[in-house]
Length: 193
Image (cartoon, rainbow, N blue to C red):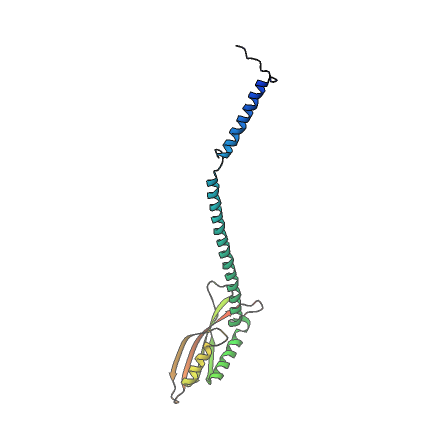
């Protein structure tokens, strides 16, 4: 069997060849038009909706993270301000607390006795804060004691009354008062107790 010879110059062959090329082009266009290859318009719309939802969720997470970061920064600043204003520096602890007691006692009308300072105890979870316990003895009347306690509560130093013992004296309205206070000491770079 012999293969017939095709003459590409004959109009009949040229027309058949042109029709074949057009048929092939139509098939390629039909594949793309009917989305036989790739995504359909519905698939693309669904993907677009999904990507937009993911974008909204990511923006919400970003805004929450920004707010959380701003809150953390604000908390850090407020914590540093709190430590600076209410905690005594280790270098000046004794003199600061004694001055504070003397001022409070004088304002309340109490007579100050002796003070005893315990060694500072490190506060667990803090690298630079210690708790210092001070026991002080005072004499005064009930009204002076109430004023003193109120002044301790409003003191610019962070003083916490741990124990308050009151005993009447034989001298009438005079009370013997023993107060055990806790205060907090922050390390400073310059010195130690």
